[in-house]
Structure formats: structure tokens, C-alpha cells
Image (tube, rainbow, N blue to C red; front, side):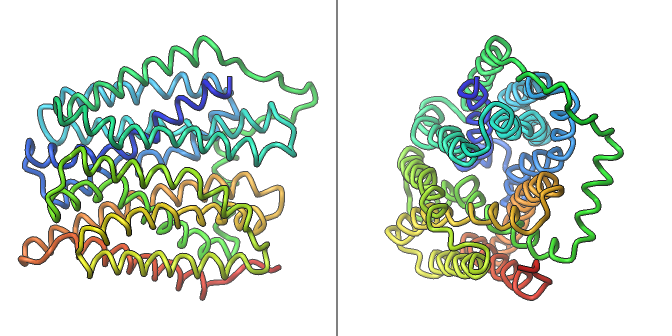
Length: 391
């Protein structure tokens, strides 16, 4: 059953990284500016992130199976709408529907693991689920680039819609709710749950943790999921399949490094310094990508960003250790919201930066990469100077 649930998560990974492959075709068909392209890519992350709280409550009230089976058809509808879209507004609506439909995809996996597997196995099984689900990103590398090159960006959405429909049927067929203990606590109402989430923001160290969360995963996904394809195609003349090969490599290395960094976790006393240090190194990589502008630097730098992205798993450990047990679940949900709202924010802001640079006759990719580096540094400064949790 867990493997079947992971198929839904894998499709959500594919949907969130599709823009890097279809960006050139979208811009040609609809005459999009870089700003409009950034808004398109951010629409998925915004709708995905804002729905985390409500999907979490839905899972608690109605269970894993019913929540996913109810929400996921919206992703299928959004993909079909995008494939048939006559204009930019329609394809933007499709992105938002896909984001809402995919919102519970990983949450249901974590809840299922928590209910079905013993606590000592949670981290190991969750890591395996993350790795398997990440195969969806591999599909939006070379394979989907080949499909788009042979047909069009619309076919990419049609293929993902078909795969998502198959995943929904598998989930309907194979997944059943784990038995609940007879003495389970009464379920919260929606209002009580929302008030509980709001209380987290009264904790002094929440602000610093969430502001860093806004920029870390966002930096990786803004490169891999939005600008990598256009950068390689327009700056260096790569073909769509060649840029897909690079995207495939970046995705592949990003699947394995979280486990490595998880094993290297230095513990709560040094973890915050590691998070700041690696975030600054990541900002330095984006600075090099902005300024050097050589093909081997852009390819190697993108792969290095994929390798380094594994350190972000330490943020989950930081959140877990920063709050009492009674608040850990809510803190993780708010943290997840911050991650994906940060993706939406960064993709939109980098689109603005690219449009402004183009209007002034400057290299839009330099503006994009410098913006990402600057936002990472700002996140580190907030994490450093705002209140930290007591250790």
C-alpha cells in the first residue's frame, strides 16, 4: 500500500518540476515574459503550500485514503486543462488545480508510515519513500524532454494526466485505512486545528526557522524546476533533450544526498551553524553561476546545487528539536507550508528580476541567479539574528 501511495507522491514531484522542460514552448506559444513564466511556475507551489494545513486536517478527520482520492482528481483535471489550454490564463488555472490536487501526496505517505510502521522505523521508511517519490523528478528530465521535442509541451501534460489517472485507480484499488485504536483521542474540529497552528507563530524562534525555510528548498527548485532548461537552451544553445539530460543528473544526485547529510547530522548544538554555513555555500554557488557564464560552470554548478541540496534534510531535524512533542506535528506542517510558499515567492520574484533585466538589455539569467543568492543570504541573516530555540 505504501508503494502505491508513493506513486501519487512521484507524480507530484513530476508536476512541480515540469516547467524547466516546457518553459521554452510555453513562451513561444503564448508570448510569455519571464515574469509571467515565474508566476506560472510559482502557481503550483503557492496552491500546494497554502493547502497543507487543510489537507493535514482532512487526513486527521477523514483518513489517508479518502483525502487523497478526493483531492488527486483535481491534479488530473488540471493537467488535462493545461494540455488543452487556449491561453495563458487557462494554463495558469491548470497549475493551481494541479497544486491543490497534489497537496496531500506526501502527507498521506508520512501519516501512513506513522500508523503502520513502528516508531523506530519511521525515519528509515520515510527516507526510502522520499527517494522513491523523487523518481518523478527523473521523469521530467530526459524522458519528458524527448516527449516534448517529438510533440509539444501539451503532450507532456497529457502524459502526466494519464499517469496520474492510473495512480488514482491503483490507490482506489489497493489502499485501505489502517485500523485505529479503540482509545484514540477525539478528532479536532477545523477551527481548533487552525487556532493550534496560529499559536506556533507566538513562539519567538518560529520566525527565524520559517524565514530560512522560505529560501532553501526554493533555491534548488527554482533552478531545477524553472530556470535550468531556459538557461542552458538560451545561454549556451543546448537542445531540449540535452538540457533534459542535465536536469536528469541534477535530480538523480538530489535523490541520494539527503541520506548522506542525515547520517552526518552533528546534533542540535551544532546543527544551526551547519545550516547557516551550507546555505552560504549554496549562495556562493549561485553567485558563481551568475558571474562566470561558461557551459561547464553552469552544468557543473547545477549538479553541485543538486548535491548540496541534501543538507536541507537537517532543517527537518532542527524543527523537530525546536518544539515540544505536543507541537511537533503542527510545526512540521507549518514548516512544509513555508517551504512551498517560499518556492512560489522565489519563482515569482526571479521572474520579476528576469523581466526587469531584459527590459534594460541585461542578461536575465544573471539577474535570476543573483536574486536567488541574495535571498539565501537574507534567509541566513534572519536565521542568525532572530531568536533561536533554547538548547
